[in-house]
Length: 147
Image (cartoon, rainbow, N blue to C red; front, top):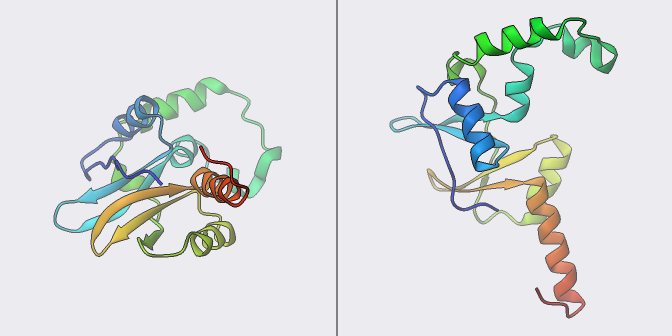
């Protein structure tokens, strides 16, 4: 779990988010309003999906974009859009939720990242790689191997 959580406010643009994700080497960022709290998340998938035709999800992987320049143009236009127009649900877990329960929920609901909350405060972000890391650490502990 990452405890040094980077957040953005509701006035951020998708360009701001794209640079932040790349510079900080993170895959998602919570969007937080000082008065309303956690509004949602923006992740890499939301950024990549933003300029694609809305029919793409229906067509799946067999869809071919014949003109990459059209995609690039829509991407550049879309980067100035507000983060609020592209929010995805922020899946939250209480800080005392067992990691096995978090893992099961993440798999069953296809969640890539979760926000760990303690009351109304964000205390961490958990990803599938954090779950795998915890599994390895638990296995090493059981075998007497220490990092």
